[in-house]
Image (cartoon, rainbow, N blue to C red):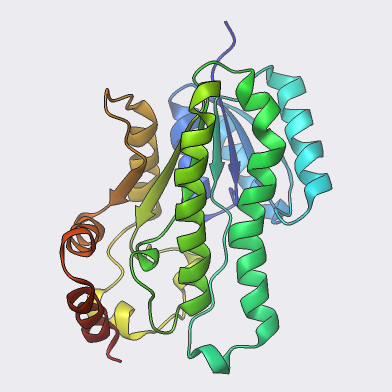
Length: 260
């Protein structure tokens, strides 16, 4: 049998890069895709130097044609698609009205439409690979709407619902769909981001932490299906509180942490 495969978006840096390196080290054939060609070249060199196998290509996740082309190329080279990691995302922070409408729309287009487009395009390859999985990068900001991260949190809340629905629909195809939930991660995405929440909770996770969480989540095939995987103690605590506390208490806690 050919080696298992993973197709990762936003792979040139941050969480995507860390995930690509980890899976390559574990023997996976890695498909690494991004709009950053220079970053992809560095990643490919690092994977190859360590004895791994990497396939790279330019992919704007909002472009359906590019999705179709990159997936077809990867499948032609490997013959399978075991794991799709929808990692690509963008973030803008600040008061909602102070951010241009075009920036809000871009967040939704990349973070949500990119996931929808890629997952839809990948279906035929996932269906034909036994035990395939889709990993969607969610965010603890989707647990309850975050001040100064309104459209970003909204995009991730939509990814949450999409993940849950597709996990139910695609079970009959033997495709597992799950969501990874980190708090703020020390990557370029949060460089220069100063919100009430980042000040009060800090940036405590690394890209390697999240990559390790993705690896562990994709290893688990529990008797009782699990869809959501929180990364880090803070995200686990906030998710638990949101699940069991009354809505007014969750709102109060978020108001406190955001300094609103």
